[in-house]
Length: 116
Image 1: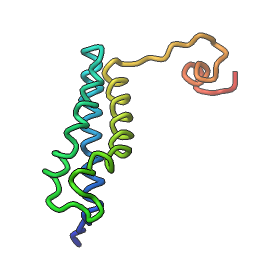
Image 2: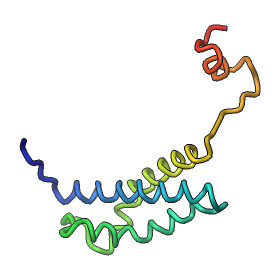
Image 3: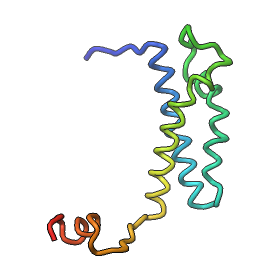
Image 4: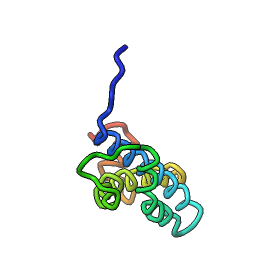
């Protein structure tokens, strides 16, 4: 099996996504216990530069040490938001509440078909 070698740019992206996933899981679980638990993930964002530097020994040439938070923001934010909502929904055992038996979602979940 051929070993795949990652470029520094790919390592940077993967480490940011992994940190976003971890922060999202922590935020979602904390939000089920404490009203403002989701804020923990935002606080953990401030540690992104330290986590990325610990995972990657050599940064991509276009990224300087002071630019990590700025370059990682959108990738981290999207992963954090997705996994915060996912873990929160799973932890609270969300069940949809139907306000009308005429709705498409009600018919899909109760009849298994859209046709009434």
